Length: 189
Image 1 (cartoon, helix red, strand yellow):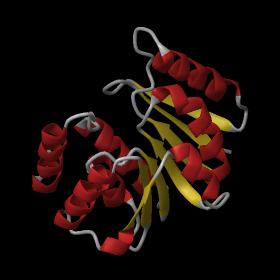
Image 2 (cartoon, rainbow, N blue to C red; image 1 turned 30 degrees about the vertical axis):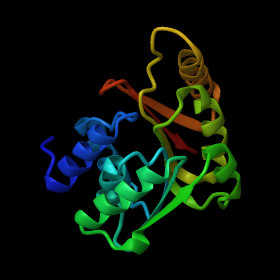
Image 3 (cartoon, rainbow, N blue to C red; image 1 turned 180 degrees about the vertical axis):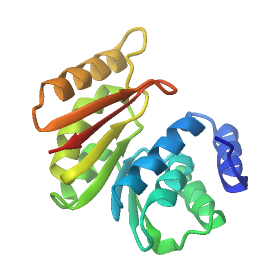
Image 4 (tube, rainbow, N blue to C red; image 1 turned 60 degrees about the horizontal axis):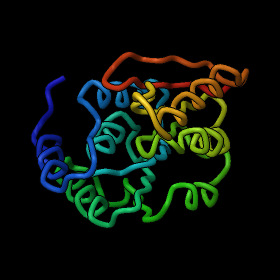
């Protein structure tokens, strides 16, 4: 997947800022595909970064749809807003919330979202799954980036626990896509 100028600029901003690893182009393409496939109108993103995944999500969403993106870093939000504007999105298409996802997600409406995308601390992926399932409508999709466990540590524990939870939950139809660090998606029945 070839990235255009807004995505390349957002990727350069992320490299300059450091500290976050943007989604790979293949992950972005998969996000756009998933949001388009379900006609997403409302999406939650955990981990705004510099706006790369947000651009991909917004490009797949229906006209007039709203992306709600949560991040702890004000600079990420500043750069994401700039990236969204450069990509041609109106300011009201992205609601950026500053704070810890585990503090913000409980304040969002139950069953009001079509897709929840998590690209943040893998150690918290099990908690994000629990919160995401509450937020999703039936037929909605929860997606985790870098879902393949790394070599060791809390991230491995979180990714492994996430995989076990998704596999054991009969409300979910899961799929692990072997792109980048693994993308785990599950449809809520």
